[in-house]
Image 1 (cartoon, helix red, strand yellow):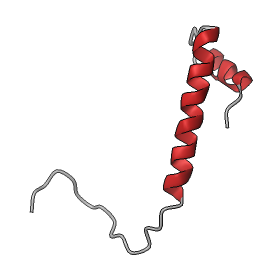
Image 2 (cartoon, rainbow, N blue to C red):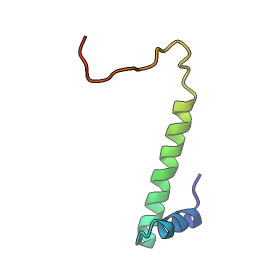
Image 3 (cartoon, rainbow, N blue to C red):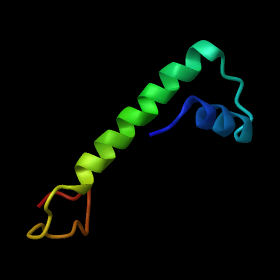
Length: 58
């Protein structure tokens, strides 16, 4: 999970001007995304065929 300090460091590296009010909102959003990604990583895709083409109708 991201800390407020890490968000501030990332903002500085990216040359973003983020207000203190926005930092907590951004931290919550990034942490929520990390939770979502960790849930996706747990999905069993053993029997799922790899996607080789998109946008083409059969």
